[in-house]
Amino acid sequence: MVSRNSALSNLWIGERLGRRRTIALGGIIMIIGAILQTASFGYAQMLVARVITGLGNGLNTSTVPAYHAECASPEKRGYLIMIEGSLITFGIMVSYVRLLDRFWINSSAQWRAPVALQIVFALVMIIGVEFLPDSPRWLVNQERHAEALAVISALEDKPHNHPEVQRTFSAIREAALAENTLSEKGKSHHKFNLRELLHGGRSQNFRRATLGIVIQAFQQITGINLITYYATLLFERLGINDLNSRILAACNGTEYFLASLIAIWLIEKAGRRKLMIFGAIGQTTTMVLLAVLGSIDRSSTNVVSAVLLFVFNSFFAIGWLGMTWLYPAEITPLRIRQPANALSTASNWAFNFMVVMVTGPSFQNIGYHTYTVFACLNAFIIPIVYFYFPETAGKSLEDMDVVFAQAYNEGVSPVAVSLRKDLPHAGSPEADEILGFGIRRRNNPSSSSPSQTGKDHTDVEKRG
Image (cartoon, rainbow, N blue to C red):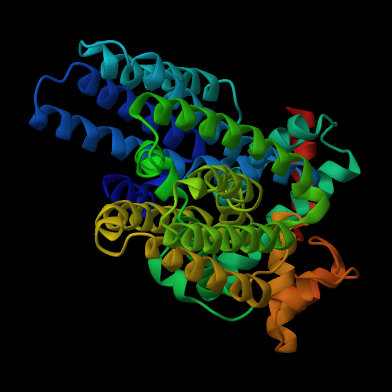
């Protein structure tokens, strides 16, 4: 719950500090919390330490995906953030293995060493982010255009005046200008207001923020943390002894990591929607089978049930693990991306808390029907994704503005528009018309085009 509240704090501080500084701040807070956890000698101290760590974790989980998406090219964005998702499972695998390794240790080192390990990863993150550039999209939103152009040039490894660099800069600049103009009566730049999250119109802010919130909630109601948090207990419920349950949990975490690598390969080939639907269908089927086998009071079914826990992880790793960190950053417009990601991440942590708190009592009271509940929840996800979640694969972040604007103009579903092959790309004259930017430019001929502004900044840098 602390991570949820910390993610919500990004509604106010994330855009002000920028992506890099927010990530560094989150890492520093996590290190402080981890040190206090490792040195804990009482419940109160551990509780305070966990609260502090959660504050840092909330900042990072609501910032890193947005930063990653804003720096990646459309053709690489999916698999790069899927790598991020795989690293989550790598951490889970390491934690299971370390806990197994510590099984025979009777001192407090059994838990202190694994807790202290997070300090190493946080240090690597803090040091590493210092060598990375600011997000070019955040820089544009702060009207630091020359810096943004330099970052785009570096990321694409092309000179400032290269057509592709100019096109990318133009699309970002135009999207930012259009959003700022739409948000408050023609002002080109002003302070963000939370009410903008409720806006409709061409920007469709409310719809897009809601999609991010919903997909993060969906990740948790699949029941993944039923397995991640309770793996050892689930294996023990199947009649497996303590040591073997821990070994199986470590194997389960390893298989989880390996399955997540498949999504890296598939994400740009299959697209977001197909992977989400595939994962939800597989998860539904697995939960149904677990419920059926749970109703049969025979030890012979235990082996199959144990295998199904591995199968569920595989479907989830392919369809829903990294997807819920990728999609909210892709679907939201630049101006509300950080606050919208704060809300979506808070949704993830809130539903994470709910599932973890409910699962234990649920098994005690309704037994195998717990699997039935999660089977129904997974089945519910399938039609929602099919009818309401647009495809983002192969599109720039600014192209998604065009998708929602065109859907609004035509009064049709953004899903249908996102699947079209002939949709104009952001930065083109056709896209300007869809966004309404061309109309405003004709009504105000004195305003310079984003493309021209980009060229002006290139000239300024050359003269400098």
